[in-house]
Length: 78
Image (tube, rainbow, N blue to C red; front, side):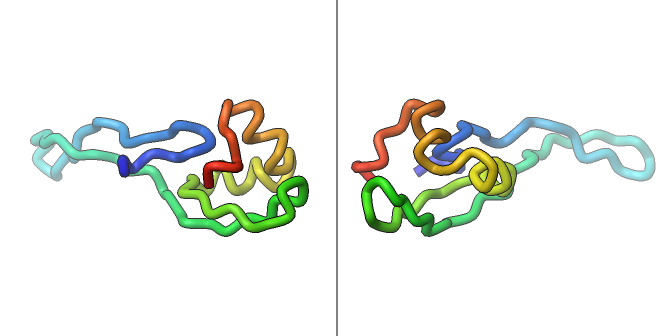
């Protein structure tokens, strides 16, 4: 599985690590992903998702059903 948020689609960003002498080397800025068990009331069960911490905060506002519909995800597969 790729290191990508299942709800928002966030993934790693390419960047540079800059040393004190200002030499630049390539590095990846990874997404802060967490495995999260979320209660899905419409399905009457828990759903386990690999989501970013930003998505967790948004999930608390919107709810899982609305967020999954917006992302185009079928929660019955998880």
